[in-house]
Length: 239
Image (tube, rainbow, N blue to C red; front, side, top):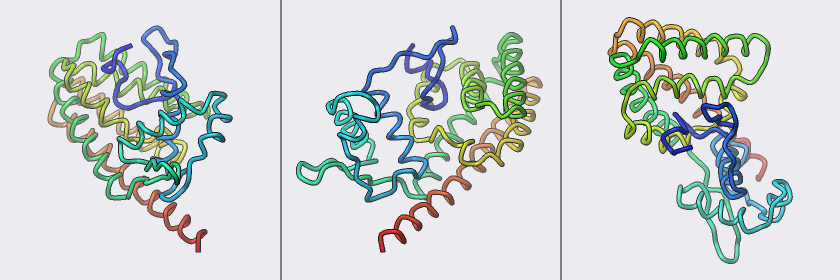
């Protein structure tokens, strides 16, 4: 599985086209999970990451956890010090909005290009994934993977490996637990998917881009407010 195949953002259980989740190293697993906890506000600025505790949780040694923290330090999410250990820097509401703005811009271009290039077979697959997502939402099943696959299929249809790779890089800063945090967002999100599919089917690139950009903009506002509240709660608990 190449970086391009990873789709619009990093997903812990991202499947291959054959349906099986790719095998990851202990370092990769620790990096993804810790990153997601920071991005979703479970780990707040100033929190310490206990390497031994995380290693026990993941059933691994201390080394891959430390390597994961070094990778997160390069992303600006944690600070690694020789004596004080690993502390969370976190993300601000402004950074969340910035991350989503990047995703919105890149995804909007991908949708616009996809509207011009998508094949009947690809469009059929997008429709199938959307139907499966609606069923999952109605039955209370996990929709994160299906949502990921829906956007990945559209991004693949844009015909640009370079753009897909850029989306993958930007998507690392998007939390995986979005729908878990905001279940009320699911109906609106699915309706936006309906509109996006219609634009793709008409070959209306401008409309597909507009819908996609607004799709991500709404998500960014909710998450930035959530992160701001989590930071306030953490600060109050420390007083």
